[in-house]
Length: 436
Image (cartoon, rainbow, N blue to C red; front, side):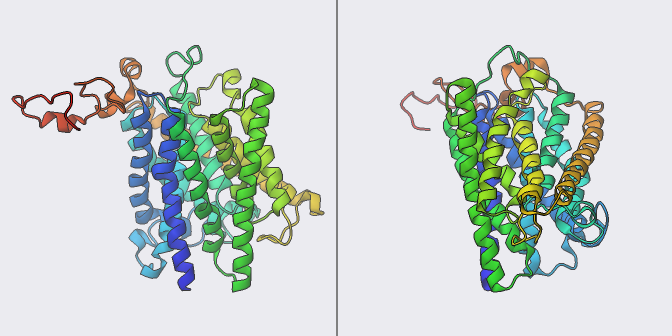
């Protein structure tokens, strides 16, 4: 029991690290220099808002009892009735809610009003993520995806990645294209940050996937070690295979194997193995990773053909990768896995594949419809999109009064508005050699 708590503490910290700072770095590096701070701020603010809201009603809606779509929000309000020794499980699931909301931000870089994001995040968590978490993770007899449909999803292919990917697509369509896209090339401003973020995401994902198996509980010691070992290995191998799959496609199509492709391949593999991690063997993990890496590398180019401006490829990686990993459980699942179900190639027939596909369909429809309602409500009240002038100048300055890089001596762009306002008018100027 002591080992369980120690592991879950580490796993929870790892998953929180996936959002702050890992996702913030990954997305921040991919952004343009005039919007990197805003991109990172969206992750940090999502963590603050969703974390508090999850403790208030999210845990109750997800794990407070029976219900097809969600449990009673008031059953465990502010964790009333939850013993303090169970708080670690609450905190673990809270970090899932946080990163799911934060993932959406990459699609709307450069043009979503920060105030609109602050309003969107709690509404989306309350009406989309918390119910989806119940449908997928609660696994009561009544919960729709896990209980009634019987689809397997160990760490959130549907609740996290498909959910966030569809929400991102909805926002992108309602926001419209960035000014100048696709005519202007909007390259990542700092791929070093992106590579660092991708590495931290990979590290944190062991808390994400392995922690989900441990959180499920109910194992004896032998089963516990078997499932944690399987999950750690499948997560690792799928990610490695996805890197190679992505780079092969890049090499064939663009004649280059890029660092951005490697970083994106890492995320695509992690996304795809997330729902399947407890269900497949090692060869199945490699197959899922390679397929996801290759298909996502192709899918990120669809935005140019279909005309939707998904700034940092949330749709191409998280939506597409989540669908691949969730559906392919029905092909590569083995009966010696956590779910005890043979997939198509192991003689299980088309039943498991149909269950997985139906789970995906429910996630797409639920997230798509409710997100559209929330986004339209914000659009026609306070507005979603930044003013054109502010978008051209840069959202960092417009929303936060800061810039990420103070490249000119004497520039106040790197300081905060509040700090600048407190400097007395008579204060002597620093010499160029003065330290910061």
